[in-house]
Image (cartoon, rainbow, N blue to C red; front, side, top):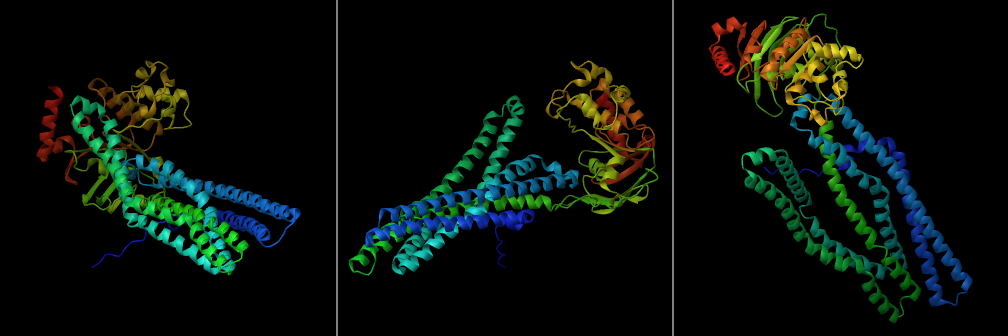
Length: 580
């Protein structure tokens, strides 16, 4: 069965709702643009009248000066109104783009945190580059596209009133040129999408080459990786060159025909004049009008090209705005902080199921440790509670209340989450720690840092707590960043604490101190700990061995050593590794 052809996306179809609050301004800009077109055509009328007087009468100088002054006023009015129209459309366009950016920013706050694991670069490109790129088209397309289409139409109608024969000659000639030029648009949507894909591949190859340059050099992969980078760059360039070659013959031939409608008009006009069927003043005016047809139409074609590109970008933005949000309710109050997973299943969007009917209970104030082989689903279990995604089946509840009944703000207050991918803002250590508790005094922050055994290393830095950590905390080591993140979570003082490989980047010398700090931070809290070092989970009230998205065993360390051979094997291997 033949697939139904999909319409190309358009900005007005995808994001036109953001224009509605400013529709009055957009309409006014179009009205002013139309009046400016009328004024511009009026200038042609006065010049044509002057030409007719020169050929058919003996006009006085004052009459000619009067017509010239009227034409000048019309041109001045045309320029003023067109600029005013453009200013109003810019005013509306910038507010439309502000609304789109605000909607994107607000949407990001409501998106599942798992959405951002797909990479933030595309969101930055969308929020900054794509939205900014719409300004040129959005601010100009309504008033100027209207003017560029209306002016040639009015000129052509006037030409038909003056002499239908010359008007028909000009129309056929221009249509012939555009018909030839139209060959450029064959399969445009498909080819434009191919160009975008080639551009994305080139960007990805560039980022990969730059970010991986250390690995590339260390493992002597320069030639291979540079070849991949070079192939992507040449692929992008060759795609554009080949597309340009395909369209150039149509563009060249069309541009050799369409702009020069004045020549067949002149030839036809002279023939009609020789036969006495055409007034010379009419011929001059029609010639003048013929010059005002092709240029605006060509500008309009450029806008159609920009509209196609803007439609593709608008579709990407609309996809983000329509992305499913976490299911949250109007709010509920939990009187206790125990956690239940009841037959919980999960599958990634458009993917196979990765968690299969998990059921377990974490009493309030106790710790559940999740251990098992990599890829078994440990982090996914913890992230469902943290709000990375919604479970696709079953119920997760806190204090007997399903997560879907809480507001996101309530869950944010109840849960503190620390993983191995620590992010710090380009600010001082003090301000990064204060994020956990914005109202905290400096003394409270220092006290918490002492509890986490971080005070000494912070004080040893050049400016102590006032040391700036750099972009993403780049001036600190991985272990130092992670210790800062643990203190930040402790500052939040949430009743539920999730530690997802939170000690993965710490060195053995500091791990004992951090474990002591985590024990203090976890006191009287409900804790889920994802760990790869089994020595850190021995004291947990419950340990769940997770493999292939299922809990194969759950109990204390002693119970698992007896009942779970896989856990026992991992424990023995970890002892060998740690003490070798």
